[in-house]
Length: 455
Image 1 (cartoon, helix red, strand yellow):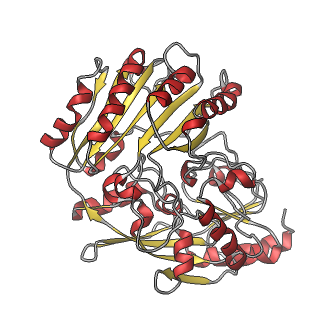
Image 2 (spheres, one colour):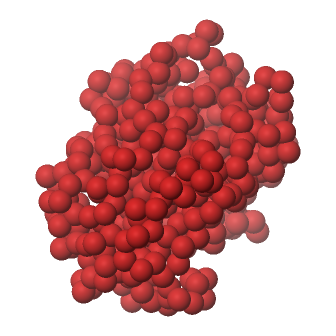
């Protein structure tokens, strides 16, 4: 804990509030969307602007303590213990440049806020399965959008960053002014600087055809077989994924689905409703869906594709990349978590990669996953009656699928980072070596050591 004199100095340096563990508001400030992750920093600064961030970093370096950053609390897979946390949720500046088709957002802005601002101008960004997520943290991990197969990773469209480095200095970072740091920030997560704002390209927002189809879990083998045969026939303008869902018997789950094993197909097509319906027809003919929600949608309805939970929950997650999803992969998956299996895993999801996600950009970046065919994500709900079982079931799932895994992950879908070897799996070896070498340049004292750190 900082000495009283040092704490008083920090409060005088920043405009935003400063919280210690015993202060009212501390718990709210460090609260994470994953409520099983309870952060315990020594001190929190509620930054209201980039100058607060710079002052907080300089103060932390002078104190010899580390710096962590939290905006919305999504992606909190590991508790932050000690050090100074900078909470950026108050940094809500947002500007949409309609002529340039760009947005500039502060570090605390969520995708849903941008959607509200950009949609009236016929524009959209590239958010993932939930618009409740913060734009900056998501993009620093690469940003895997719903329309990724058509338009690429969110980080592919970044124009510039405003950051505070480990020396507390403000820096403008783009491909021309600082090409190395620009490439490191796009996919390197929070290892090199605190991003205070970001400018990125927007796209035409138009009606799309999408939504989900829920099938009864007893037909999982039939549905997954049809999905595997269907995937190669779907163009890049369509994004698709499929998940085994073991839905709890709780109020927020729609009544027909409560306490059931379901197979959830997700589909989003940037094309006409007629063509979207035609593409989806083979999967509509499979089994007898319990619920079919696919239809023409406007972009503000994008969350209905994946139907991610909107309220904080306690959970454990883990991810990986698959080089195939074939008959053997399917059999292994169903053996470990299919119908008749008592599993505590809430979700096991396979998303299709390829298309624009596989294309190497002209400028080097630090995004992993371009060479994989599918991503794998599992989430176990840490409800009291099953919480102790979740970690071992996650390990068993990945062990069963080991022959089909590439051995690497995407950093935003990695889950709880383990030792140095495990952390390195979020990047290919060449990129990880580049990140490690750059860390000694941009953060030699490992000030930014929390989260998925590589120091």
